[in-house]
Structures are given as C-alpha cells and as structure tokens.
Image 1 (cartoon, rainbow, N blue to C red):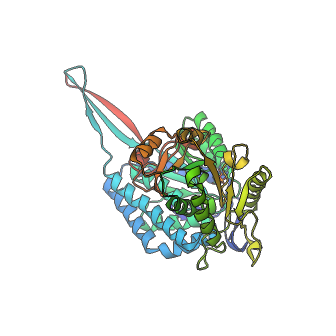
Image 2: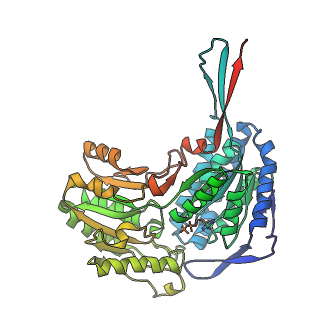
Image 3: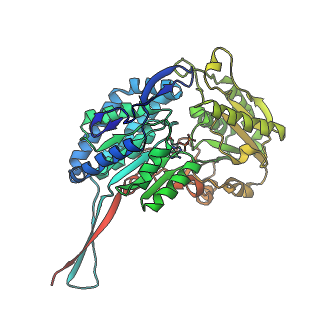
Length: 476
Ligand code: ADP
C-alpha cells in the first residue's frame, strides 16, 4: 500500500493474490488491508492537506504534466499490465492508457483556471468576493473495468484543486493502481498527498472512508447497489458525494439511418471491454425498415470477432472479470432464449483451446428481444447485443427512457431535426449522435437517475473538488 509517501505492508501483515482473468494464473500479491490501514491513510492525507492546498496552481499543474508525460512514455508497459490483470485486448488497453493520461493533462491545464468572482452588493460601502478552495481529503473507490482511467479521472481534478486523497482500487485490479501511484510519486507528488489502501474485502475500508469526518468528499465508480449504500453512509457524515454508477444504454436506429454504418458502430461499441462498460448499449432499437440490413451486418461482424487472451494478435474480445460474471451473462441469455429470443450468433460459454482456464463468453447477438426479458431491464456487463425491432418512430424515445438508469444513449439518424429532438428528449447524461465514443477528458461524463450524481471530466469535473468561500468587505 502507499501511505505517506512510502510503500508499506498491511498492518495485519496479510496479502491477497491477483489473477489473470484469461488464464487463471497468479500474477501478483498485494497487501490485504482493513480499517486500521484506511485510518493511517486518512491521517496522512489529512496532515498533508495544509501544505498541498497552499501550493500554487502552477506547481500542481507541473507535477500533473510530468505524470502525464510518464504515462505516455510507459504506455506500452502499462497496457501490457492492464491486459494481464484486467483482460481487455492490448489495443484497447493502449487506448485506455492514453484516455487515462489525458485526464492528468486536462486537469493540469484547468488547475490554472480556478478563479473567483467580485460580486455586487446592495450597499454602496460594501464589496463581495467569492473564491473557490479545495474541499479537503477526498476518498475514492474505483472499479476494475477501466482500472487506470477511472483513477486518473478522480486524481487529476483532486490534485489540480489542491485536495489530498485516499484511494481503494478494486480488488481485481490493484496492480494497475500501483503502477499509477509509482508514476505520481516519481512525478513529484509530495508524501501524504496521494495514499492507496488495498484490500480483498472492501467493506471495512468503505466504512472507514465514509464514517471519518476528516474525509470531506467521497467519489465512487461502480455498481448502483454499492454506490447507493456508500452515498447513504457518506450522507451521515455530511461528505460531498459523486457516484458514477451502472447504465442500460439504448441505441436507436432511425429509419433514415444507414443501417450498415449503425451496425458497424454497434458492433464496435458493444464488444468493447467484452461489454463490461457502464456506457455499453443494452437495447438496440432498430426500426423495422432498417432491421434486416442492420442484423445482417451485425451478425457478420459478431461472427468475425475472436475471443481469447488479449495479449494475442487478432483477439477482439477478452475474458470477463470472473466466473460470477459469466454466470450472470449466461443466465440472461437463457432467460431470453426461454422467452423467445433468436440467437443467430453465440449464446454459450467458451471453453475450447484453453479458454476454460479463464472466464469467457461467446460474443452473442439476441434478436426478437421483448420487455419481459431480464436482459431488457438489467445491466448485462457482458458481450451480448440485444436487438429490439420497433415500428413507431414517435414512441421510440419513450421506450428508450423506460429505465431507472440514465447514463448513455446513442442515436443513428441522418436528420438533424431527429437528432436534436432525440438529444433533448432522452433522459441520459451522455448522448452519442452517429458516434460511438462520446467521451473525452474535456467533456462532462455522468448519469441521471440511478446512474449517479455529479460529473467527471470537463470543467465540471474540477468543480466537484472545490467549495466556495465568500468575503463581505466593508468600506466604512
Ligand atoms: P462491480 O459490480 O463493477 O464490481 P462494485 O460496485 O461491486 O462494482 O465495485 C466497485 C468498487 O466498489 C470496487 O472497488 C469494490 O471493491 C468496491 N466495493 C464493493 N462493495 C463495497 C462496499 N460494501 N463498501 C465499499 N466498497 C465496496
């Protein structure tokens, strides 16, 4: 673990193993911490806040830029580590390292734009000043599906704002977190400013983070159930909360869209990270006029996808995180099959050629999907593309909005009017319009309803780590 600028063992002396999800091989060990280690990390972050929060934005930006450069220099080895620990194909890991690094550069630039306001008063002899200051110690809990970019999306703005931080990375991917901490340390982040506690059981750490009044903000990315639980605990301590949670993205193909282009987009997007993404499309609404061409193109694309170890050339789909994830996907597919879905491609666990040692499910296409199927309502987090054919263009937004989630949605149309109308009416935080990658460090990312609170990235991503202080100044 990394506490107060040093690599340390867990106070209890225990460790846990990290495995490669493609092969089952043990690839490392990390300290298995508990609430005592969390307390030491919070104490270090609390002590470091006084000096870090008074550094200039220029100093903080320089450190973040050095860390960005180091990430770029080491992109190859970081990507290999990510593929070994998390499973996604090497090319996708490289992309994530670049995306993750960009949060450090973006927030280095934003650090110098933390400004205040001179405000009017109703009294002629009074002036008002409002400035923004760092909130204090931030606790971060991050997931395994994007093990580097989900860290830097929180670290970048926290450090830029002048906050100090304690992090608990997901138990499946602490080695990626360790590599990023080594980089931040080398870039010159002072002792105590960034601390990391690792553990196999997240509960005592989460409890310690959310019950400690030295912690002023909780930032979490993960499932809706855990986010809700942690936000509730943080509320009792009056900590600020940002939670980026699950999704159930609709992907709407209008009758005027090019069905082949839409199917190519859907294939590229759905099978990214084996479908283990909160912005992964979960309901592909295709107008009847476009359905045959769309399904034909998508079927051909899915058939071509090769599942396997992400280190191997030509592999487009890696393993799922664990066996429980494979079981969940298999159960959703069986439920859909029982209720009448067609399965032109996939629909089974992959076990041949050594894949039984990892956690693989075949890239799968479901057709004739209906609202009574579990896959229509629940997040799949797996390589399954469910197609729903619709007839009424005026009703499709209502269908798309019929979910308690609200993270991402996608629209394919050639009509500007249709695109803008859909953009305005969809109750989701991120909308791709003829575009399957509506994310960047420079734009806000986050959801509505059960998909979360707050935004990460963009200039809003920095606001989450700042609070406003007002001065009333008398001229009498
Ligand atoms: P996923 O279903 O994507 O694994 P989780 O919400 O279970 O998502 O995990 C996201 C992060 O939340 C991980 O770092 C995990 O260790 C942590 N986590 C899970 N359960 C708890 C909990 N009860 N308290 C604190 N952290 C938790």
